[in-house]
Length: 344
Image 1 (cartoon, rainbow, N blue to C red):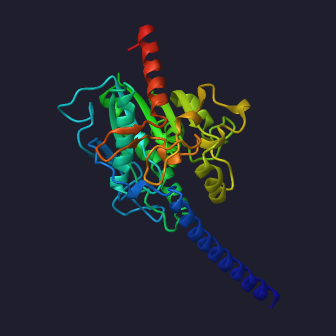
Image 2 (cartoon, helix red, strand yellow):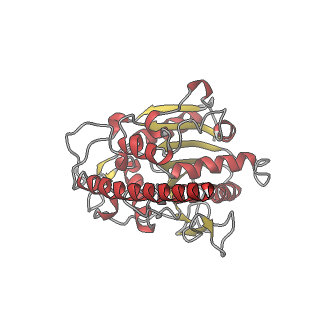
Image 3 (cartoon, rainbow, N blue to C red):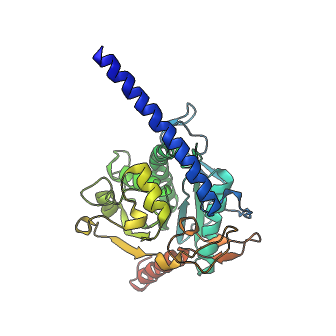
């Protein structure tokens, strides 16, 4: 009888906890909406053309659908060097969007990054990576975020497969990957797959640079004594983490969901275990305040998680370039050094 009573009490506690979370999420979601901190999905963003690697429809409820396997992907549009009739570029940048993006939002997110990068003199080939990130079920995404995290992780092998396929077609092209928010999880898992999976680990595939922007992953996961550190050292030329200690979306929302601190807020937890190719970049001054309409205001800097990839007006003009000026500067600077050294 005591066991039955204990089980009933446990069930009641779980139910009450869920109701509190949902109620709190609704209140907090309303507050966030009033403060202009909700998703950019309702802004009047222009549609920007860009080739896309897509795994949309490959996942449902954190599992692969029956029609798809671990490594398959589709492409939309012609990717330079990948499709017949196109030339291999010197550089290819793959952009992986973040959480709660439907297909059009994903395209817009990548498009904002594209325009912001181009404003800063970056004219290399770009391709977006679109995944099943639209799993938010409540204003705080207390349930949907974890499903999104699972699906971001399961996209790692698919991104790895594309990179291996691309290097087979364009062996001299330099590959760079830009990850935003939860999209960072896909990139880190891609590195682990390249480094550990028997199908890939003997292939000499290197990613020239990786750029983590507003990274929504635990701050110790990139350390060499944790899951991804060794793969970062073995498979990446230079690994950049752009962070802001004033990023409150990561500062308290991430803490509520994961019970840990985010890499995009605090930077790496223990520098003694930082990969040898790890570079910290304080992006505080690049993240300007926005008003409720999405326009730049004179508020304090650093707390603008949504603006990391830049902000466009309804005509597609860059209002603010977010952290993309630093990304462009680092990739262009690295390529310049390679040319001076006589490398291709």
